[in-house]
Every structure is written in C-alpha cells, then in structure tokens.
Image 1 (cartoon, rainbow, N blue to C red):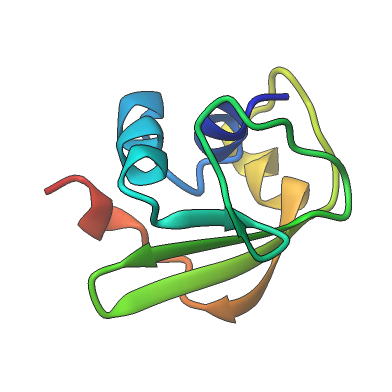
Image 2: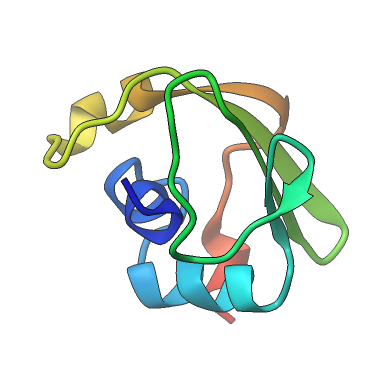
Length: 90
C-alpha cells in the first residue's frame, strides 16, 4: 500500500492530500529513510512524521484497504509522540 494512502486509511493523518504534502516536505520517513508519498508500506515498518516541534513514530501492524473508524488504530502502534494529528491541517 502507498504511504500516503496508509496514513489516510489508518487516520494517522486525516486527508490523503495532507499526507502527500508532508511526504513532499520531507517530513515523513520509513525505517529511517525519507519517503515519498508513493513509497510502499509493509507490516513491521516504522513510520516517523514530524510536524513543527511535534512528531510521531509508529509501527505498522497490519495493512487494510478499507477500515472502519473505530478499527483504524489497530493498524499501527504508537512508539513515540502523541496521536494528536490536528496540526497537519494548517
């Protein structure tokens, strides 16, 4: 699954366009490497996202094309940071 789609489906970032902008701004990495929006995500990957002073580090637990809102958080595990992602919608 594409990185930008995973971020949207898992609801780490609320909109796919915002996820793409974060990737284009080199604020998202997979396993320590800067990632593009089209980069493929696999189970077990570590995603790091930086927004201003805040950041989040999450491990991909499972990949699903469609998921209900209440099940979205089961797709990843927060390793560091806060899950509050409202700031990316500036």
